[in-house]
Length: 370
Image (cartoon, rainbow, N blue to C red; front, side, top):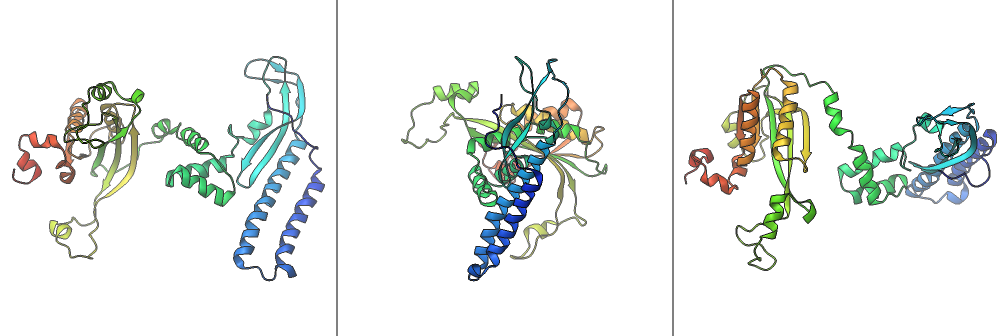
């Protein structure tokens, strides 16, 4: 049960608005008076930012106080649990950290013995479950995606004065991404002309894991790992046995350029000469999963591609880096679905795979002599 509001009751609407007007006049007067004649532009801006933010916080608090004072009591309220709340108490409050600072939200509490309180105003206001407002949480998600948790903390502190811990940032991002798996299927498939190529791309990234999170085969190899031959450095062919593969993928439509490019335009252009327009990837869809197998993630790529081309009328392309297992999974998915897929291999990446050295036709596949 939430606690009761502490301190004196909210001031009347007229008195509160007079205070706001006085604060605004005081802010402008303090920056234009004789004592402030020597202030630099930077000092003026800083004063407006700090005191202006506090003024906006007071405006937000005044609006909430007036709404709380005008909240009408209902005769009885029945909760989702079927219990009728016949008792009503004023003054129940919770703190919400807004873009301008913390404010107190007061509302009526509908109560019944042995049952949790109901706050009808919470649904009307759309209050977040966490103590941070939706605007602050949106900014936290954007800043964290653009950089790191540490950068998001600094940006939020500089722009809003709000301080959020790293653990709270992680929880906010996890909650923001919770609806992502169901978001894309709910949207209509992107429309594209029948002749444009449809491309899928898959790649794996090894991520170091704690012992309890490793897959069974990786954990077995880690237990059987021989002592390192060079102290802290792995020897040739040695694996740390600490990683599991996070499979990433994308589905997109390929919009070709107006004029096809020639090999001379790509490879023979002079230094500083701009490259000719190439194909453009549009309507991109991304996925990444570290808990599913690589085959499951690639299957999800094919599912998304078939949403765009259910009749398999468009040319399909698969972009890979030479990973033999990925190519086998893509071929298996295409065969099971009756799809003809052209596989394009990144030769620069494929040269790094030891498995490629054992492939039949390796010389022709890599385009170089053995």
